[in-house]
Image (tube, rainbow, N blue to C red):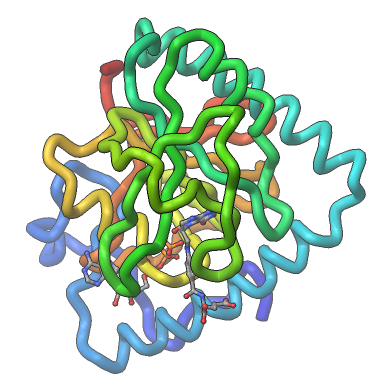
Length: 233
Ligand SMILES: Nc1nc2c(c(=O)[nH]1)N(C=O)[C@@H](CNc1ccc(C(=O)N[C@@H](CCC(=O)O)C(=O)O)cc1)CN2
Ligand SMILES: Nc1ncnc2c1ncn2[C@@H]1O[C@H](COP(=O)(O)OP(=O)(O)OP(=O)(O)O)[C@@H](O)[C@H]1O
C-alpha cells in the first residue's frame, strides 16, 4: 500500500461531524466498528512502510537528521518552554531508527533540567515516567527498550517528547500502535506539553484520527518546527 491509499471507507470532514472537533482541524471519526477496523488495518500498513523507510536511511543521514532535530528542539524549548531548569522533561531512549537525542538529554540534565524516560509498566495502561541521569544504570524493559531501574524516582513530566513513526499537519501522531501516548496524555492533568519528534519524510496527509487520538502541542522535524498548537508554557 502506498502513502496515498485510503482506508476502504472515506473519512472526510463534513459539517455534521463538526461537533466531534474540539479545536478545529480534521474531524475525529466517530465511526462504526467496520470503519474503525479499516483504519486500524491502514495504520498497520502505514507503520510498516514508514518504519521500513526509516530503517533504510544511511547511518550518516540518520545522524544528520538527529543532529538537526536536537538543534531545533533546543531552540524550541528555549523559545516556547521558558526556563527549563528545575522542570521535568520526558525524553525517549531511541529504538528502531528513532532520532537519537541522548546528547541533548545529557545537556539538559547538566543545565539543571530533571530528565525522565517513559516505561510500559502495565500493558494497555498509561506510561510511567522515571528519572534518568547520565549515571543511571539502564535495564531492559518491555519490548526490550532500555529503561531506568525500578528504584528510579517516578515523575510527572511537564514537557514530554513523543517519538513519531508518522505525523500529520493537524498534530496527530502514529506511533508503534500500542496507544500508550494517547492513554498517557488522556490520563494526565494538567496535560504535559507534548512535542512530537519525527522525520520530515514521515509526514502523511492524515492519520485518519479516531476518537482516542490526542493532538500533540507541537511537531518538530529535522527541517524545523512543523506544527505548533499550544501557547508556550
Ligand atoms: N524509544 C521509545 N520508547 C518508548 C516509546 C516509543 O515510541 N519510543 N513508547 C511510546 O509509546 C513506549 C513504548 N511503546 C510501545 C508500543 C507498542 C508496543 C507493542 O505493542 N509491541 C508489540 C509489537 C508491535 C510491533 O512489532 O509492531 C508487542 O510487544 O507485541 C510496545 C511498546 C514507551 N517507550
Ligand atoms: N485513551 C485510551 N483508552 C483506551 N484505549 C486506548 C486509548 N488510546 C488508545 N487506545 C487504544 O490503543 C490502540 C492503538 O492506538 P493508536 O493506533 O493510536 O496507537 P499509537 O498512538 O500509534 O501507539 P503508541 O502511542 O503506543 O506509540 C487503539 O486502537 C485504542 O484501542
